[in-house]
Length: 391
Length: 244
Image 1 (tube, rainbow over the protein chains, first blue to last red):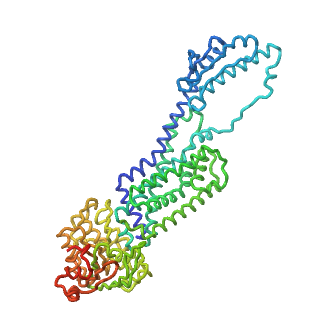
Image 2 (image 1 turned 90 degrees about the horizontal axis):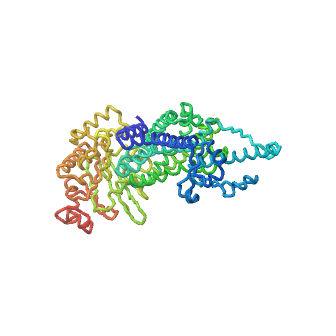
């Protein structure tokens, strides 16, 4: 047996006997993403559905001034609730999503055929209120349009006089790309899974071994240190690959738990998707294993390494967060940036666009180049005299 | 045989080892005696190539450690200062791991492991995971895994540290056995009685230098003292850091 396989099998066997590592690699890591994903999606979908279907009850101030408008609102499923004394405060304090205030001059202006004002009071920073606000605004506007058209007809003019330009919407979003918008945080879950799957191993195999003072005897064996490192990296990668495979499998079952059909979106997380995700993630597996080992090699103890790695765990969030805040157009070079490339690729897969060969190639090339650099840095760190000395 | 020539090692401003030379011969037990912090562990670490000397040469069976460190490590059985075991592996698995890293074939490995388990009287703990082992059980396991490739030269860094009387006796017995097998045994200690009881040759180190390199009798004659303890104190110039 070569030194590599000896180290590899010993690390795998030893860590299969560790409950904490197993729970992280086989349960927490792979299932955290899918479970959170399913829960979030269900909450989101239910919220949206309930708001667009349910009859709304909206406080209307001055409802008796405009019985026709109130009637029109009711036919749009919006019931006029009793007026509130202080509409602005009520909205700010979230006692009401939206309040309609009809100007006292409404009746007089209406009978004179003048423009009248209807205030819609809302808070645009409250995302959950956006559906009711849009429904109220639409109802009021379409009522106004309808009445305007009636007035023009009464004067013997065509309603088109007032609206010479008409907007006709042609949405090119497929049902899959609509869903991709909602699932843009999915890539992060895959990265997190790989990270968690290998993390405890990486800590144990470097910082842990140092803390338990077994690194010095290990290095006394007639084996080059890079071979020992290679065996350890192999073991870390194996655990994170298993984590990733479990996670992809768990995600494949997600559509069964999410009522996607209610939203008219399609979600394809099947075998093809999974296989391509795994391929995209391969360089990251090696890169993260090396980075985790490198960081652990700096730490003197298990706990110290754990602290450093929790900070490192934030790094993969950055591309996901960045992409959701700044909507950038994907430039070719971005695919070669590790994490960013994976992020773009997985979102494309979710949209159903697929990842062309050259993008996949860039992703793998950039990722593996970074991984090799990280492995080299770790090997260099492993050669240092200090590493082996525990005391 | 281990030959050490004019070793130097500095950590920052501290001259840990400052010109150490000695020879440890086959079929002899050589004791490296010195107070705590004299540079014994650093010297041994340079011998088993964990550290690179700033200057000087280490030859193990004629092989230069700076030229072919891996060949040197193959000739050595080492019980380092750090005796960490893998606590989720059994004692036997710990031994096997090091045997495989040395490239010992499976059949021979089993044979040697069983022989060592008997020689070190650790049959009762061989199948147990090492978590919760006593100090003595840990040292036994660490020695067994250091000897599994049947090395000609054996380095032991304070082998009796933390052992009780029975375990210490067993350790001395084992070292005599290694000597009888014709191996070169080099061990460090700060305990004079132990060195006196075991050694054919004593190398006394203080402040990173060799201050004496004699047989126990010659050491007495040289200092004109009647007990080794007095002889050591006289050589080192102080009794700081020495235990009787």
